[in-house]
Length: 179
Ligand SMILES: [Mg+2]
Image (cartoon, rainbow, N blue to C red; front, side):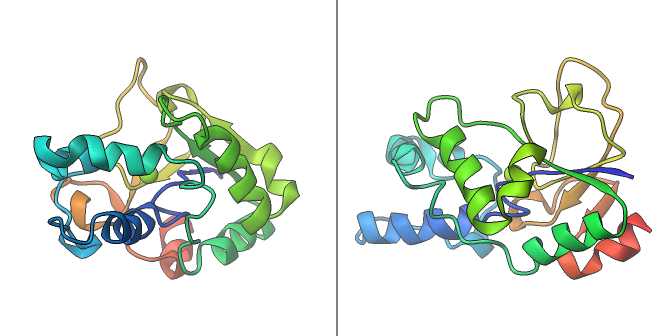
């Protein structure tokens, strides 16, 4: 199988790091714990009053570098590869960030190892990327063409409403999903 895995969400804990930084930067402001998030886009969830501040946290140097690995993610990537699957990291850049792409590569080197750097595919339109599955936390993935892959939703509080399709609640469940 050709398996594409999104980086932010399934592999790197974007939500946890954002919340930690938000609380640290704005201790007196309203905050939304990751478990209570309801909308995929952070700046929409935080509303017009706080959206610029939310964006600024994500655009800060070091944000993508510091994302903690999701429990079990690194092991699952290694195990899927060892099982003979062609596993790739398929990630869309935060286009306005000066640091996102470089830091994403560096994150892969640091947590998965240098070998995996050549398995990174950065694309703003994932429908152009070939695969059997795309494991991704974004509820609705659209693009210019009909994708070859089947979207497997990596579960998160903000994608519970998404209809149909396969879902992955935790990395320990991947063998049932792909097998
Ligand atoms: Mg994601």
